[in-house]
Image (cartoon, rainbow over all chains, first blue to last red; front, top):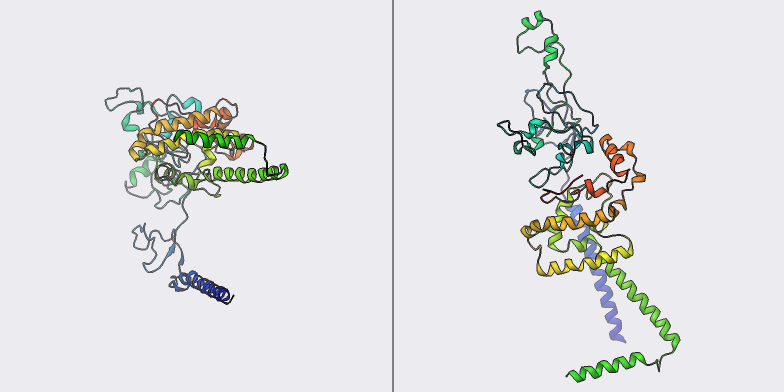
Amino acid sequence: MRNKLWTAVGVAVLMVLVFVAGWKMGQSPGAGAAPKAASVPIDARAIFVPESGQIDALRRGVPVDQEGHPPAIARVENADLKRVRAYPMQPPTIPHSIDGYQVDRNSNRCLLCHARANAATFQAPPVSVTHYMDRDDQFLATISPRRYFCNQCHVVQTDAPVLVTSQFRDIDSVLAQPATQAAAAPATARPATPAPAQPAAKE
Amino acid sequence: MGSWAKRQLLGFWRILRRPSRHYSLGFLTVAGFIVGIVFWGGFNTALEATNTEAFCTSCHEMRDNVFQELKSTIHYSNRSGVRATCPDCHVPHRWTDKIARKMQASKEVWGKIFGTISTREKFLDERLTLADHEWQRLKANNSLECRNCHNYDSMDLTRQASRAAQVHKLWLGSGEKTCIDCHKGIAHQLPDMTGVPQG
């Protein structure tokens, strides 16, 4: 009887000890951690180009000993609206998101819809005939291997702000400019009214 | 030795055939009921245990190949946090179909024992065959596992991208095609698709 009582007491004490040990161990990481450096609420976009004029893509002008809030990840435009080409031979930009598209030796997700044979099924613009030609202008039955990786030329567009304002003007606006002004202005001069900036291409 | 085993078996058979001498009918009925519940519960629990992602990925064949590929897709990680686990797509939800699939899966145990896809190279070599089994299955049951969650009647086409809405209406709405016809390789990488119709 006495023996049993002592065993019970021993077990109870052991359980309390284990509980306390567990409690202490569970608490220690939070208490022991060093206080985190306060992050500085700097809109990194605003000072992407610091005073020196150099684009600071990595730290975005935030001092090295401080932590800036990174800008939000840009969203891919997915409106399915075809965009105007800036110049005649520009590879058209992709007007939809292409997340997780598998384009490799085994399969090409783009060609699922944009291949000549599938274009009608999916009401997608088929790839140009030039993409079926090899470099000697000979037509092939399937897509030319040098055109296989669509993303080499065709890219999606995001809603990211334009980092550097584009001064590009397409040929129509150049032709529309009065002849005297065009002759007077040096080639490198900034145009009086910049053309509407195209969104920056993101890959 | 043979005759001894035979005698034992015959003795057991005689016990089974004879009416109970010591136990009442009531006891046997109630005990049978309780044991039945325990067995059925045990069977279902075991079945459900094999129907979890943890069970699937406990083998390196699944964990190192297909599960890694799933992780980057929308069926694993997305904005709302709803996700599909292995059995959601690969095991039918209805009981009869589930048991049928589980019986088929005994071949996979065979494959595991003999290491049919025990290395990455073996897996890649077999991938087209394995994928083809799943495509055939989903084609045959009209993409049942997709439709467990993706119900065409509940799809708000106006909230889809316009090209998605157009194509869904044209092919899925008319019943001419089923999900797997176009959506091969959404959760795992595709094998060499030469000659395999997509879309």
